[in-house]
Length: 316
Ligand SMILES: Nc1ncnc2c1ncn2[C@@H]1O[C@H](COP(=O)(O)OP(=O)(O)OP(=O)(O)O)[C@@H](O)[C@H]1O
Ligand SMILES: [Mg+2]
Image (cartoon, rainbow, N blue to C red; front, side, top):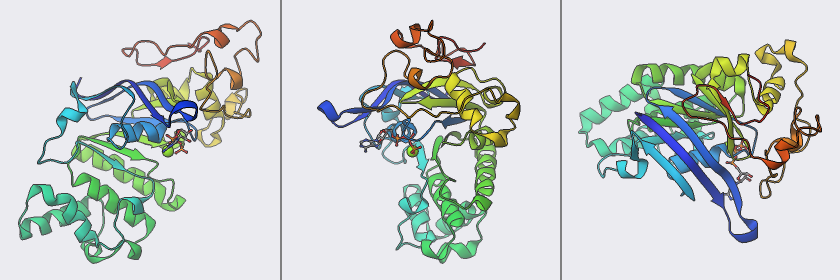
């Protein structure tokens, strides 16, 4: 497969009794040119997975491949990493003492452009993210949050990435500019053809941007489907609960879906069997005959299936 392929990826922190497994055996494909969304509540392991993909943490296990080769073998000395990340907080990727021009020049160093070439390329990047050329000589603090995030995106694009990992890129921004940034990223993907993993705790955001959506719960992917299908006919009770918590998606007809009220389990000691069983509205708490959920960890099923859910009693 052309694109990014994760198999059985494990990411953990700490040692011994303080060991926390944040990502526990994740399989996920981001095929070339596709937009894949990753949703899940806070602490489910989304950023940990992202950090493993871009090499900010070493996975404890599993494989991460691009075009069928280990991602680590793609590191050519003269080129930046083929996977680039855009973070929630643009300030984390922008040096406050560097003007936009300096920041972009640094990201373009690998191309060894002359003065005129560099100037033209900076102009092109700013145009791509819809910023005026007058932005080039400003410092980050002279820009709005939305403008800073556009610069962070331009910086990532300067590396000509095959895959962009965007982690909550709109959640620190004013609601009024969130839509514009999402539209920009969609448009850029259409023009430049990179693939993208878009991470958000907001299913509405992911659905708006992404072709496919994966739902993460306590270190595991519990459901994957085409975004529209996932919203229309979610199969995993956790996805259904997430949707129930999103009235703006027009799910008012589905009021029987329970919102998650029980507290999230301790990630250091995930529940046995299905990890969702202590909060599940259709599991052993609701039906005493469903003891299977306490004993057996449900598998999501074959990667080839376009819609898969890791639940013993998933709806068809
Ligand atoms: N550097 C770290 N050291 C120890 N534990 C960590 C570290 N980073 C994350 N964790 C833990 O790993 C788990 C997953 O965290 P992660 O940040 O990946 O979740 P997330 O889905 O991105 O959450 P959010 O939506 O809040 O960003 C959490 O229990 C978190 O406390
Ligand atoms: Mg996160």
